[in-house]
Length: 368
Ligand code: M6R
Image (cartoon, rainbow, N blue to C red):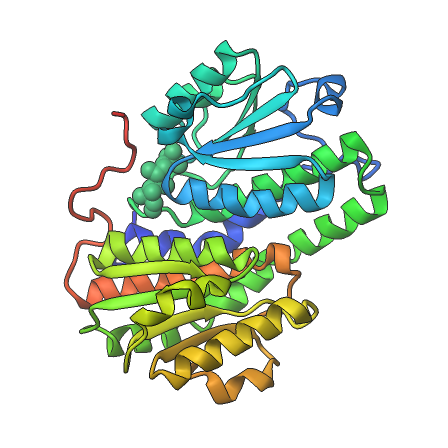
């Protein structure tokens, strides 16, 4: 069943080009308009939405953080992202014009389920983004976008995550279409870019051996940091979570702009720091990231830089350079997460851990 791979997780990482393609399949009608078959929430109702609250846990929460950047940018609807376990207990402000989006790979996460029950009791519409057909969360929601990743066996989410991202982009574009905040041509332009993503993900996978090599080089490391900005920030958090789950080592993700507000004190000789650099078109963001990299390198960090393949200006500051395809900043998480998944999988393997069944973890957390 593992198709010759040592772990389901590794197999699922390599299935991502196919999973992303499947998640995009059949989403445009003959006229090129977006259609979401199981949306089930009327256009008239969506037009009245003035706030979105995304609720999720773990990796799904980090997908939700990326979704906030995309939805706000394309629709101008304000978005909050909330941990499912915190949501009910802060007495959230929910009205009929609030759309609650629950993201869950399994569709059975107890915290997320309780959160949508709370939201529906307050008359809000609930849309699920889910990978598991017929699971409880989509059954109890008003509408659903299925992610079509196929069964995910590894406890650490990989193809589940990238297909959640695709579903979030689709939701953002669908709302933009419904609320007329983007022209049809603009929506089709982003859809074309999304349809190019499976090939881009494959390009990153083709470099897996290089990532494996420096994962093995770092087998004795006690801690790893991850830095990103904009949509790269949630990717940094996701990279750190993968490493905690699988390698049982301390790992933390930061927004690069926060470094000087504290975390830079952690930097010491030889500490591996992954740095996700925004694409070259986004110069303001990119330059700030580059100066953060210079600062940590001056303090002895071993920088592992993920940047556009021809971003040569970065090479003097990169102890390792992972080359990414050229994609828009909002879509960059789809490619930037892949080396982080490969790194965690390989480091945990080299440490002798069970990658598919990490200690203390369950695939779906059905208790609160
Ligand atoms: O099934 P869900 O998406 O609701 O699960 C949420 C989290 O439990 C899950 O993403 C968890 O963090 C994974 N083990 C991450 O790899």
